[in-house]
Length: 270
Image (cartoon, rainbow, N blue to C red):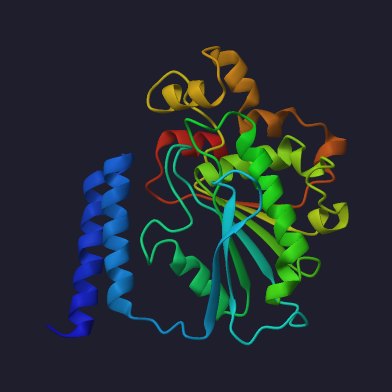
């Protein structure tokens, strides 16, 4: 079988898996998708020799407060490249900067090979995590990126983009709309924040607090069985509850949904 045929076969298997699962999502579907997408990346055999990466850099004291930095091999502190900070998903129960050797590293390799620096951050998860730890971790990681990007050739003051996928979108939304990025501990200059862009990819902004697994996980994360309290603390509630004066200081924001999103993700974005 030729390399082209093998790659096509891998994509055919992924398409079949998407059709099989439809809008259903969980650990089983996630594991299958990761395996199939990793296979595609293996078959593509892309050359990323022009990319450097530094892994497991700490941005806080907890073991989960760490990040990886991908940057062009020829970048210097004077390169002034766009900086991107990425937060993975996983429902606050799983996920990491690297799920497999090619997943999520493909994101860092893509951006760095296109003259950006990519900071891929992870954060505290259940059972250790407790609201608002996700937002606090996001604020700390973004603050680290602003303070340290220039070492790798980035210029956050010129271009800073924050990307949150699924639960990663939940913690970045909470950090932004809950005011955690403006706290003295985050030390994020207002001018940089105002000129940044926040991208929410299939973000978990609304919680189905009446049905598992979200009802179970969010009760643990918010440390309460009071569904009304959880509803008041979920990202979409913070967004809707903000006044016009607060909203006027928010940066650019973009939301993206796929054609197979399940209801919980759609409700948080519509």
